[in-house]
Length: 520
Image 1 (spheres, rainbow, N blue to C red):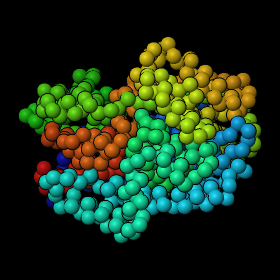
Image 2: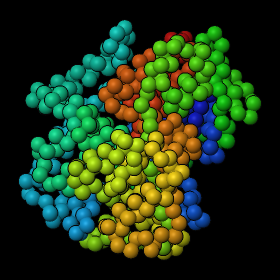
Image 3: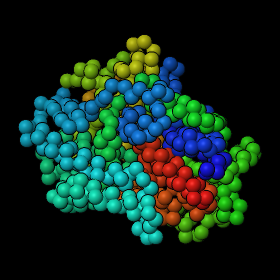
Image 4: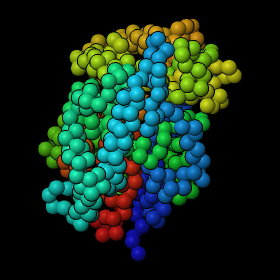
């Protein structure tokens, strides 16, 4: 029988809870330590004005792994994904485009574009599905591979060659490393449709549609669509956090909030436990960090415990956020020309064309916020009126590009950026400004401070090719274990990266259990 270990999970975000539940279910003694006063991290629902509640960061459920959902029995733990939502690309003249997982519609679309989109989504969904063996396992090393690495590579190769077929495999290899701008220009004519698709490739990243590897980031997001539709859970994303919390509790996990970790204690290259900011010291056989890599290795672990080259690589991780989150309390529903109330309940995008998205990104290159930002908008109170007082509503907006390192500093630019976003929405929803009762802006600097994520990056680091797969977060810590024996990573900093998938937590747990079985 495998020895039972005492495990501490640093951080009670969704991946930390997933990892903790798997380990506890396997018979280990697990304690989760969360610095905030609630669990769930960016998936938590919170009140930003009296009577108005909204999901803190993530506001759409679209990528949760069905395996995690089934293994942890999240449905019986209270998970109800809610009504599926589609994407509506807004147009100032009212000629909006409605984009589903396989179909697209809109008065301004040609029959050719409707058919082209159908084929494009079928092809790219097929490509994304072929990545399944790689996504659901630890990324294989290319040198000194173990049997698990070889099996993963073999399954990936089989999926690419025989799952896709020779013709599709060649096309996948052709487009996989290029940019989404060129790919969309090849197959679709509608600027509005191309702009909306391009947003899914760059949202949360420091890249525009013309940036190399933006096809790869699009496939990463699209992978979620291979097994689930986007939805707005009742009660916000906090419902997901609550289901994960209940599953963890049922598995025997000990959960502590308001328990900020000051450092991970290490002796002779071995993780021994943690010290809280309160001064309390807790011992453990295994420490698992749900924090980003820079926080883990540069703040929580003394750099003297690590090789200088390893520390240099950690320092070099690109992890500066580019997305701001805005929450609006409204005294009624916005009125958008050509859009009925049913449409307002879906995911709304302001990204008229790819040039607009690229120009928005250009500002971020020079430490400026976008003059005309790309906006992803939801009004979750349509599906769940309990989120706001009777007759009122809440609007959640992800605004990009809003760089962490703003040249003039966010203290001086908060109001200016908020007004740019309001002005942008006003172009599509006249009278919007008069409906605002209260508002909240979370810049990447605020996200860093409130959610303890270095640089305020939602994905704990850019998801470009040099920071993905066997290079995530860096060489030397890409298979969830680290140079510190007994210290593991389980958050979005690890493979396969960001998004509310639960897969980093799942994969990390499987890695820990496999190593525990072998006696480390």
